[in-house]
Image (tube, rainbow, N blue to C red; front, side, top):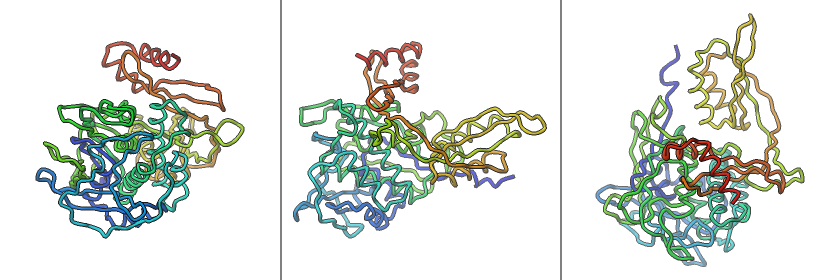
Length: 460
């Protein structure tokens, strides 16, 4: 019998009752144990100039919370990074950075980067910056996936290819630091699973360069498609595009808090004062079961596919490892939990194939496709959660079409559609099943009707 604690998972539950933004996420992680000095040391590996950090304790309606700020340095002048992370727009972000300082006590000595970069950064520039950094591979991968989701949302809004998305320099520095800091915090705290509550979006309007737009902002609306959200009479933008990109990329599921033993509760402060505590509440705990009644978060198993291939072939190539194990003595009910954990740990794909084994026994060939850096973590899960006593692996080459995710509006609601391209030719278009399923349940119509409506909207 294996020890019970072998199946325990360090879990982070994000209670988004006041929304979520990038700075609130980092503040909450610091409040549950992320060392600000260690964070600063890791951020130095990004080699990003033009900012310094401030971390302070503030009071939010009687709650003590950690406020995280990115202070931009510009020719000796300093100002808060309160511009948006969206290209060519100005947001009045309620939960993002603001000029008001609230009960600040410096928790760390500000670390200053003095060089200022160019006026704009493209999504490709940002991804290259992350790729060239000295950060760990897992931090690079997660941060890049978050930025690709943010870039895809912007591309969908403005009707341009994702490679042409550009971010204002101020917003880019702010978003880079918030996003990379969030991922560093997840890694440094040893968090294995993230669950988030339904997202409180807020109400009202947000000002952009083209005028007033309803909340949620267009990018936030696209990023939160397929996850549970709600609104109340609370005014203002509670979920920012950066916050939406972080939580929808990193969270394994959305729903009520899973059963867990709480280790620490932390609060990440937003900059505005409201009628309720403007904080992101984070529960860091230990759990040994999957959350019930939860909605799975969107997955992006092949993030490199979102960029235009550099070769004339019209498709991407990349290395991967295939892990295989033959199993003939396991309760078939256990496969669901096994596959869930493998996918949550970074498996690119998991396949079960029927095989005939020795002594004429029917068995199952478990085949896991993985990034080479994930092999050890996946083998640990395979040996703990299955009955196999051995596995094998071999290297393969993946051939992948370029893809993008577009969001279309149907008479039933918004649906994300995956579009695959071979060179300049569109070769496949597939509506997102989860979006179609939710709309089918809401409107009482067959999924195939939603599916057809999405394809029709895409072609119109």
